[in-house]
Amino acid sequence: MDKGNKFYFIGIGGIGMSSIAQYLVANNFIVGGYDLTKTDITKNLEKIGVEINYKDELKSIPSSFKYKSVVVIFTPAISLKNKQLFFFNKQGNQIFKRAEFLGYLTNKFKTIAIAGTHGKTTTAAIVTHLFYKTQQSFTAFVGGILNEFNSNIIITGNKYAVVEADEYDRSFLNLNPSIGLITSIDSDHLDIYGSFGEVKKSFNQFIRKVKNKVIVNKDLGINGITYSLNKKADYSANNISFSKTGYFFDLTTPSNTYKSVFFSQLGLHNLLNAIGAFAISSQVGINEKELCKCLSTFKGVKRRFQLVLNSKNDIIIDDYAHHPNEINAVWNALEDHFPYEKKCVIFQPHLYSRTKDFMNEFATALSKFDRVVLLPIYPARELPIKGIESSVLQRKIKSKNIVELVKRENLLSVMNNFPEKVKVILGAGDIGLEIQKIKVKLK
Image (tube, rainbow, N blue to C red):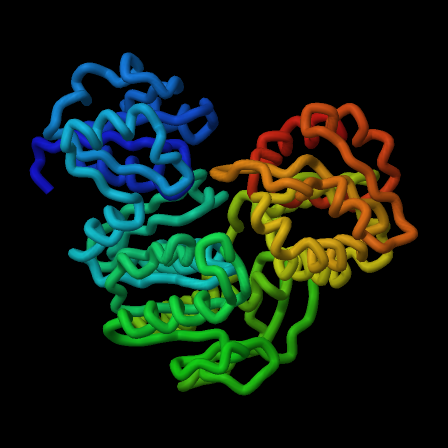
């Protein structure tokens, strides 16, 4: 990259876009961008000097960013009909998709790419924590806000890049990893892939791009360095016991066994992610005893089984779960840690296509809760699909329990009427904007 380059992001408030923007600012580039809404992410970008506009109009683009020499980066969530993107396209600017630019950026690093339909963000966050605590030279682009840093990018050096390898739109095929880890492969993004077979084919292509070591969840049956819970694998957690704040377990590695290791987050799915992150860190040569200590100090990621409130009357947990398998993982964690409490789920379905593809699976997963509150489907990049709406999902939930429809703007006013002590808020749309309001209201 030429030091004279300016960069303009269309969809700069996205979690993946904002980390790249921050990286460029940290390296003294001039950055601007557009997003539809002002959020905490865009406010933080503005604080570090990023000029952001919020109307998709040509006149909104600052004059200093209208030149043909400006490099433009856009997210797939942005429509190709976007007026600003159309302008830059017509003008002949150099334009990258976010994934293409991330691949270009990370070519100079030893890249550690974490793939999988679920668990990418938490695994990448734990790797980031372990690398930071053991003083590695790295830059991490994480798809969530780490509580420890209140940031989605950590920069200590340029030996390693820690990135999430996103399967959506086959984005992860833009990366050239030295080490690749796969957490899970489930049917998802069928609007892109069409079938689960095509999803698996894409992951196989990703594996072939990994230059050095492939690390895989043992349950996937893929050749590589394996990790697991309670199963024989290269890295495995055994003799697992619960505590109020996490898990104690024995950790077996290819060279040793460590007794009574503590991991400081709830949910066995998160513990599995921690073992994967440990495997990566061990494979790059970090001292395993040090890594064991560091697992006890991980502070989690916002919206990843995040305990928002734990009071006498209310336990509120916030999670990004937007796929039936993720909802099942959340339910299992709730049953493990709050087995005797009634449970209410507030769920905002994400995408019409995903709701259509997994309508029955969503109904089955949600039926486990004592109360189900459904918000309207969050469309993101999609137009409505006829006959696909939350009321259809409501009718499919075969349960004696209460199932109701609530608009997001009315959620606060009705939550006080929910008697269930455990309230879990799920979804990948804008439901996360309600969390602090709910916390204040119930506190």
